[in-house]
Amino acid sequence: MQAVLEKLIHPEFQQSLGELEMLKGVEKKDGIWEVKVDFLTFGSPVKDQLVQAVKGAAEEPVNVVDVTTQRSTQPALGGGVLPTVKNVLAVGSGKGGVGKSTVAINIAASLALEGARVGLIDADIYGPSVPPLAGVEQFGVSMRDHMLQPVEKFGFKMMSMGFFMKPGDSVIWRGPKLHGRIELFCTQVEWGELDFMVLDLPPGTGDVALSLSQMIPLGGAVIVSTPQQVAVGIASKAINAFGKLNVPLLGLVENMSYYSCPSCGKPDNVFGHGGARQVAKDFELPFLGEIPLNSTMLEASDKGLPVVVSHPDSAPAQSLRRIAQLAAGRLSVAAVAGYDAVYENVLS
Image (cartoon, rainbow, N blue to C red; front, side, top):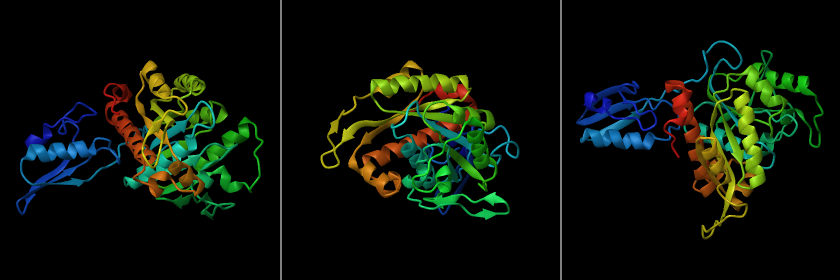
């Protein structure tokens, strides 16, 4: 049985399960085959496909057991900044108002729902959005052994400048102070062992993006845009900027892609449609998905709830879960086969 299963081809890598050493145990118990599979990443976008392939190849009753160990894009654990984090995923945008923070917090929540250990750094020092989106109203965080303790909610840990600001406060800092606060969040917070760290970047490509790219080995970045021409034009500039900073791009997301009526499901292209997909095609980057606009998303954000938690069956939640899976899948491809392979067999 093991020899048969080892020949199955992984749809993301175009290598066999045997070559990828994904089979961690194959034995028969009470007439049923138990197959232990390491899916290489939590939230693998091809997990269901692989499970069906294993069951089909066996032609006998099979119980597939998930024994996933997250692969890491970090050069080496135990050194540098965020040494206990396996993958650092940045979520950025060329301009504000495109829903970047909403996408970031829902990616973090989605990966946590997949069983991963997740952290989220709100790196938008001037306009921190994570606290209200997560429904966290507090001033200050606790300390233990001289380390800041992250706030935990929805199964993941988070840190934000918003926890150090009273309502109505504003931050008026120059570059060095911005760099210092980002360094504090990376080095003086007790994150523990994490599979993913999601970075909610400020809009544009200013000091914070530069500081992070120099400070942390970023596993990859996801660019969020809306469909309008002005937005996708600025997203193109962000792509070029990340390229100059040597930050690998995992793909583009089109937020507010179309209006999806919650009652009838009829789509309406309020802001146009397909602009981000075309940019991804022009730059030969993966397109990770479209997120529809409807009242469910607005209600969830206003209540401080990720929509993937509050309305998991809604159209926006389903899109965001898939985007998180595809991003995780791209990171696992980079970790196992290198970044060139990320663009060779693009899933959608």
